[in-house]
Amino acid sequence: GQGAVIGGDPQDRKYHDEPTFLRIGNDNVFREYVTIHRATGEGKTTIVGDRCFLMAFCHLGHNVTLENDVTMANGVGGSGHATIENLVTIGGMTGLHQFVRIGKVAMVGGMSRIVRDVPPYTLVEG
Image 1: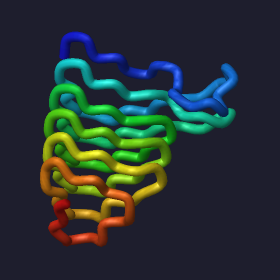
Image 2: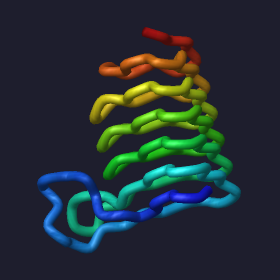
Image 3: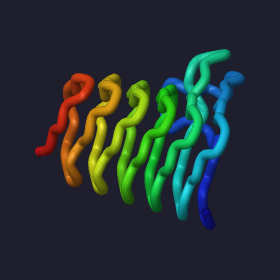
Image 4: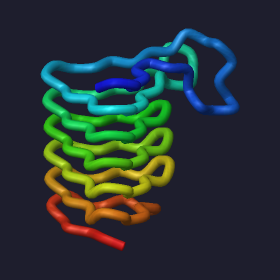
């Protein structure tokens, strides 16, 4: 989408111009103003799997792993080192804290603040 920034420098104070990567799979949709940053740490990679759909203003920080078939509604922010497993849906305006894991097939309600891991096959909000 227009205004998207894919593969920009990590937003991390530890980053000092070392070579890092962003790996993007097939058939993804990145809508308006999505930002996806490379990893921090020499040789490290931020990963986006296949068939993910990121709506407007979503953000994936450094060292995030986004597996396959993930849907993120408008304004979702994934902080550094977060892991979102297969078939997850995240409602709009949700913030994911650093190092959290969203288990496969989980659904996160909109406007949630996720500061702990979400188990697979669960529905959470708040």
